[in-house]
Length: 244
Length: 244
Image 1 (cartoon, rainbow over the protein chains, first blue to last red):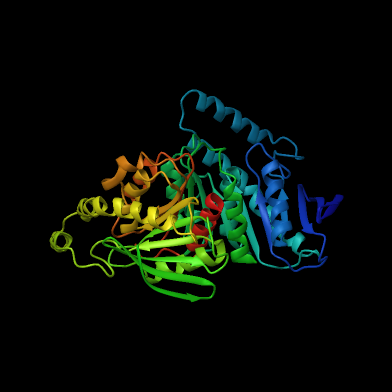
Image 2: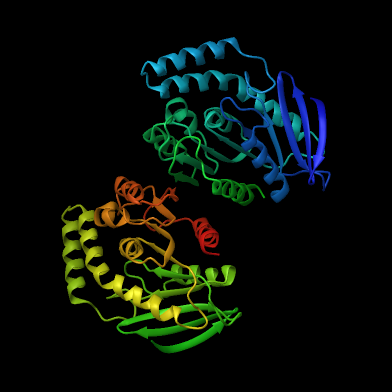
């Protein structure tokens, strides 16, 4: 794990790092300087990156208001990572298929499954490395990811026993119902009622598929990108309740 | 409006009253002694009453944590009110029909509509009377009611412009989709995913029917009576956000 920059503002320390092929950002409180503390891994959305505005806003609030550590890796082909020709070819072909009237859901599911084969081991390695740092330590782990971050998050949460609570959403059952059925930790699941990219039935089927005894679905009107701001508060309270 | 008892504990004043035919309970903070303050009307569930445990617990937290006033009337045929032969006959007939295999949803809808013809004007009169009290005053009004409290609450919220935010749930669209379409205030709507009394599709259809720009559905696993305790926290935050 190689740190490439470090800054601090408003009591929040931000370190950029590279671990193998994975660039990432780590946010921790300036004080107290040592862990262990809860750690949340954030999975960004498609076309976004580790410091996209929604990721950064959530990270800073989790640090400032909960005292947690937060880490966000760049997904392959995103952020500071090189273009992945295989992904790019599939994404371009899918855009053409969708423009020609194809159902986007199975195409998206295929794409997410392809990317998850890389990100699940990468993110587990990120947890290993970050939890060895004195200012993080081996506290409980949470996961947050919607849209692409849900498609990649479901297989990650299913595979990683350190994750004790997850906020997921804007994703359908097609890719990941089997993996969702192996998730037993508390899940908060976001649905956009008028989502133009994820059919409502597929969203509800994914919620249905989680094996968690505690799972709660939050549905709001609007399209894929219209998640209301008050769900950010709800995410903070969910993690504070389960990991704080 | 005639007060029949007054007690105080833990900074919360409780007054029982009768207004016309309607017995009710009013909870306010001991201090400050004067309003105006937000007022929440609570509609209890079927077979319950103004001081049922769930009603009392929510009322006390709204007063203690938010400084709100809370009023809960007894629904006709419930609590301190006389048996209503007309309701009793319908309820008994419905139980027999359900035991014989009838779909309970339309029977419940018919019953709720019958009761709402009484409770809508009664509850509006309760608001009039309570908001004239110095220790309440004419602040913003909220409504909370699930199950029977939703069946009666939808027509009440649709009819009463003083209500500025509502928590509803465990109810279906059959009785009240038309009235739900006249509700434009923020709504938080609770669904029990395995509700044995309200079909899931009817619940989702009622959520769909609200005309509110801000409406949020919270679904949790379990049967009709299994609403998780953390939804109480969520209710408090919803009212604090919209009325506080």
